[in-house]
Image (cartoon, rainbow, N blue to C red; front, side):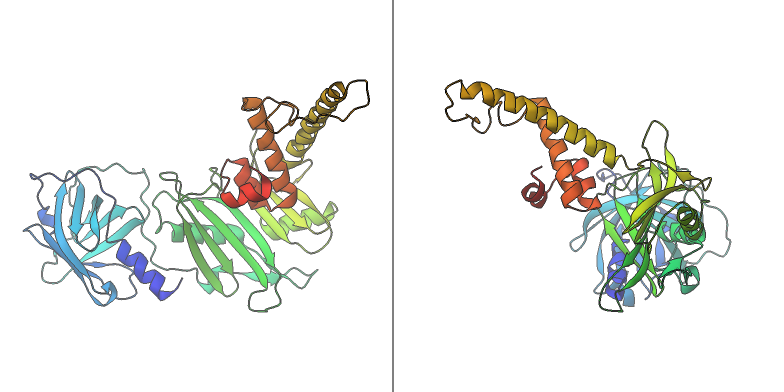
Length: 401
């Protein structure tokens, strides 16, 4: 993440999610009056809150800064600025000199500075706010440190393989807590990136986090050189949280090798799969010569298709074959016994697909056909997008969804 991106994020944390409209009877919590500094900002950012219901943001890290009106009510606060617009959110105290304000982009920790600093570090009573039971402390670093990133040669191929992934996941959890207070990791992926440029080529780990509150996602990408972060408003990465303990990737790879997996590892995905009625936490490991699945809890090899792609594909082809048989029977009847031209029907008629136009059966048939085309003609991301009804205009042109 660049310094510019960091600056934007820290400035945006000054603005909090609006919680209802502010009424004229609201006032400023006297405990908030004073000067506050944002903890963890690369350059100082100050927030002056005044008893007259105004505020100002300034400091080297605040750019041009902004100012406007400010008020609190029932454990929440709201502000209005010609620059930032209207926003608001909840806050809670940790002591008289520290409060945590929670907004759309997660919590921000503010420390009291200046002459108004309270000497006695006594707890301050505040009205309860609606929030998850566990409140994570905001984690300032923007990236994972080199000590938390470990890649070693796996002894078979000249490709560094990540290890100690449970420890890496724990560090990433704390890092992502600064993005969303309810952030949970739902999948962990290893990829080998092949590229002519040595600066791009190499091993990387992607850890996917989801905020259950609003469906947003954060992806932390880790390489031997460091890590980067990417945020998306709406994602479909799964809902099952990864546990703290699981079989590490080198061990899972050794188990897969012992059960016939050949070739350099191209991709490994750890997540909760649902091939049947019971969920399974497992590694799915893939090379150019095939793939194997390993139970991430017990370390045992798993047979069958975890993803359900093969079963879905076979079912699609079975339905398509039955539909084609029905279509051929109809066209033979339409040709008559005179040997004339076969009537294949017109678009939208019953002869163009095995189902009536506009029927639920036909929509389901076309959806399965699009999923099949995406599975064989696109990527796993394309398939997942079509499978979950997130067809874009580009997907429509490529896969007919």
